[in-house]
Image 1 (tube, rainbow, N blue to C red):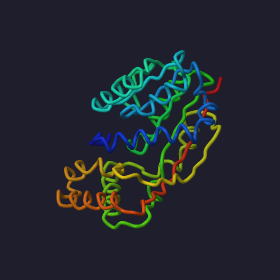
Image 2: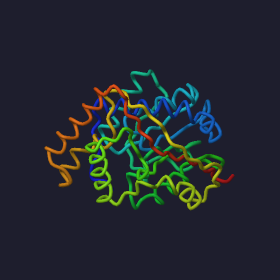
Image 3: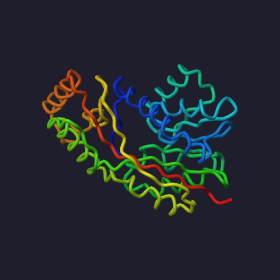
Image 4: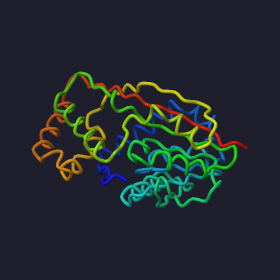
Length: 265
């Protein structure tokens, strides 16, 4: 299992909220096809600070439930706070691992996992297999993940690119597959699910000032692992501050893959 958790700074929380809002805008039809509808019970596995759990709670409504599962206490605290701020009384935050959530088998309509598999190298099959056992017959497992090797930023910023390269090195030391999005359909099929949709697209994001990439939240872990020095972190921070002040907003091109599969009746 990875030896670090992303630090949940205000910038990181902002990134999670932006991702959740973008997902609602672009994936709503796929959610409905997978069973994320009013009255459904959805397990948000690897919920992080709960931004997506709150959005899902609004979709399933008061008659539905969202079970937000994360192993990190800091993330669970943030998820509870997010649900409370949003008045999302139908969100329950639980401690659990992605491959061992503690949820009852065949107890939910949909398991959703977003950017979980890329952080759990070597456990991908176990995680998806566990998720497949959590959904009721006819229920779905809904996966979202990346191909990190194809992420680009324009205009180029050498110091930010160096930060990204070190972040990939950190994942490599953990045995993580940052291109796991390319095989989401294989993982679903291997878990005995019928693959109903598998698609990918570039997300094109104009970075607002103050937003930070996930690599920035892992700088402490990079230093601890000997992959960076405090001077590196200062240099990367200066580069990101420089981008904040740029008249031309930087654009990130990031490939994202979505797949969902249904448990046979």
